[in-house]
Length: 390
Ligand code: SDX
Image: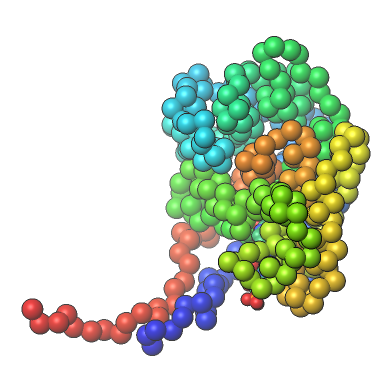
């Protein structure tokens, strides 16, 4: 049949991906990493502990964690030539573009270690990415603000090493702030995996061709960049700022969303799976209050966000469409209070999601039944026809 609107068919499901890593129940608002509920993991573990859990399937022993941490610390330095890659990019480059470019370029320094079927080399790729992505991210930030890059300080914890690379300068020593470290660790954990979301599916699709881990994750970073996905945390802050700058009542903005004016959406709301409150959003909202309070920051964008949420949760338009806050709704408020510019928010999402991408890529790569990804198509174009006589 011709002329049918492909949107009538929506997304043609190519058959569910089998995975043992993360479980989501969208109606109940349940999220578990290898069976552990997200709220327990987010408050009781560290980012690297959860990375180990997602990648290897069980929580690490103290000895395993110490060894993992030590191996990652040993790989935090970037090749000096790669540091020069940043000089070739404009100051105005979006940090997500810098991140995906640098991760793709990273593989060129280790081409002898890119064999996807050699377990030792897959381990090397794993620790190198976990160690170097935060450094690349911090350099993208420093590049954007025109400040000199620091070298990693491996005496610091994973999170403090990252914070120092972002906020430390050559002019004075960096003093870790335990409130920021704890809040960032928790936010990174909340983002570590989320089953077959768009960016993870991209990592798996590219990885299914036997492309190396770095190439697959560079593709995932690009998928995450989109404002309907990871880019939403940056878009939420822009939305809140616009509401504030307009001076209009929040309810007026909500009306515009309901009238679908120029495709205006309530960014940070809605989800492909959660038709209930995203359990991560609840935990992020708690963190937002804690961080702002402990930093003595009063952010009226948080007040606007809470008023938006209050209105939307009681409004039939959102309730009938099961639209609730998702993980991106409050994260930007915290990242901004920490001192990150909005264009770094999705980069922080990528650092959080990296262990999940690696775990999912390895799970697929270890699956002997893995088939190269090829989503099905529903052909709705012209039937056979002949070229006009010429
Ligand atoms: C992430 O998949 C994951 O797990 C992703 C993620 C992860 O951890 O990896 O959780 C991270 O990407 C969270 C989502 C971040 N994106 C945003 O916050 C952008 C705003 N949200 C929407 O674009 C939307 O909700 C999606 C894309 C997230 C989900 O879209 P769906 O499920 O495909 O919903 P839909 O587009 O079919 O919408 C159903 C209805 C439509 O109205 P009608 O046509 O029926 O009248 O709900 C409306 C939509 O217009 N709608 C919204 C809305 N989201 C959906 N209306 C206003 N604001 C919104 N945010």
